[in-house]
Length: 268
Picture 1 (tube, rainbow, N blue to C red):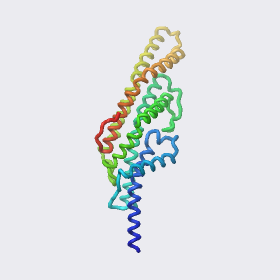
Picture 2 (tube, one colour; picture 1 turned 135 degrees about the vertical axis):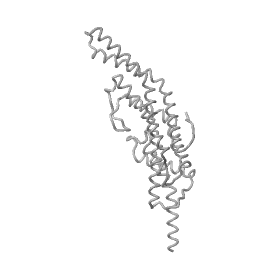
Picture 3 (cartoon, one colour; picture 1 turned 90 degrees about the vertical axis):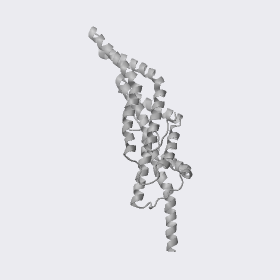
Picture 4 (cartoon, rainbow, N blue to C red; picture 1 turned 180 degrees about the vertical axis):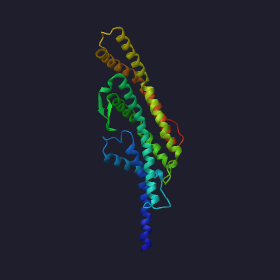
C-alpha cells in the first residue's frame, strides 16, 4: 500500500511538472509583454490567457521528464530559469515600444509640445502626449500585424532550443540586451532626426531675426512659431512610421531569436 501511494505521488508530481513549468514560462511572458502587461489589463485576464495558451501548446511541447522532483532545490532553480526565459522574451516586445516612446519624447522636446503630458498606463510615469500618441499607434500596429502571435510562436519554439531545466541563459544570450540599447537609440533617432534638424533651423532663424530686429519679442513670437512648425513636422514624419516600425520589429525579432538560441529572419 505504501509503495502504491508513493508511485501515485510520483505520477501526480510528474504530471504537474509537465504542466506547471511551461505555465510558469508562459505566464512570465504575458506578465512582461508589451501592452498586455499594462495596468489596463486585469490580472485575471492575463492569468486566463496564460492558462489557455499553455493548454493549447502543451501537446506540442510533450511531457517534461527531469531526474529530480519539483519540490527540491533543483526544481526551484528550474522554476526560476523558466521565469527568466519567459520574462526575457516578453521584455523584447517592450523594447519595441520604447523605441517610439523615446522618438516621441525627442520630437516633443524639440518642438515645444512636451508641455502637454499624460500618465503612461504602461509605465505609470508622466510622458509627453506625442510619446503617448506613438505608444497608441505602436500598440494598434503591433496587434494588427499579429505581432503578439509571432512572439507567442517564438516562445513555443523556445521550448525546443531551451528545454525545461536548471540552465537557461549564458553570457552570450544576455549580451543581446546590451546590444538592444543601441538599437533603441538608433531607431528613435532615425524617426526623430528630421524633426530635430528642422527645429534647429527654425530656432537658428529666430535667433538671427532677434539679432537683426531686437524689438521683436522672441519669447511670444518664437513659441507660437515653434508650436506650429512642430505640428507640421510631426505630420511630415508620420509617413515614415511604418518603414521604421518594420525595420525595428524585424531587428528585435532577430535579437529575440538569438536570445533563445534560434536562427531566423524578420517576419515583416
